[in-house]
Image (cartoon, rainbow, N blue to C red; front, side, top):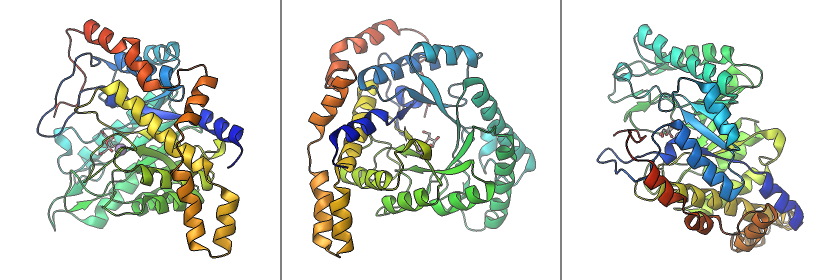
Length: 388
Ligand code: PSV
Ligand code: MN
């Protein structure tokens, strides 16, 4: 795209959804380090998310995670989000932190446990109804640790049965987003380990089921942009969980470990229409800020995604296609690299200025005094976190 105003318009319309859990305490299985000013409840998480939106202008949606974000009154939470200029994004189910789920949730060999897990997924759809959330996000930790532990194909049957029941419960404007992950916590088999498994289930379920690509959930060396291009072509890319990894599911800030990979992914998104309103790809972050300050880290992640998107939008599509048609390998690659090597920060600063925002959201947030304010105000109570 070479028309700067079209590039700017696309950048203004891209929505990046931030995760409620990114504002809470998190860590590894070795230690969770608490930070001053961390939210004590989902309302305070929304307040933090509103800071990210206020400074970037592109993050009006917040994913919730149930039960971490369970509240008495979802209408009140939704109203509060609205007052802050936000709306509720995906409802993430959690069938991985209950003792009953030791051997699996919807794929557990015991039908009573499967019922409990499916009921939780149905409760998440109730919460979608109450909050106006359009997306049910499913990630299953289900799998086995030892050869012979359970029947691999039988577990697929159980998974399919639960997914079909939940799919039936969805309203016309609600989607099911099925996330895959190579391994962890299961180490031998995982029931939804890859995009192919997720795609096959989604295809069988119908048009309201789509795949989530969490960028941290692949084997090293996997070509994620190929998966993105394939799924977009099939109309089955529902969402991203953006984050960075050096080793496994590191959940570091998007664009921190490998900005070139993020650019390649966004190139396929742009090229295959994923930024267009009709395709409805949800650009979510799924990150944990274990050692860095959370709100600025989310702001940095949002701007990293924007930078990769801006570079992808700047690719000279005509020159690229001409070079590809003529089989000029070096010229084709050169067109891509020219865009990747462009400093898009001045362009994004202009975009923000046109939206009435500060040119540098990271610096503006740090200068706002919010970090000191929340540290002083949020004393007492129990900080949110996943308590590893
Ligand atoms: C699993 O590793 C995952 O990526 C899923 O999206 C979960 O909901 C999320 O992380 C929890 O942090
Ligand atoms: Mn994820």
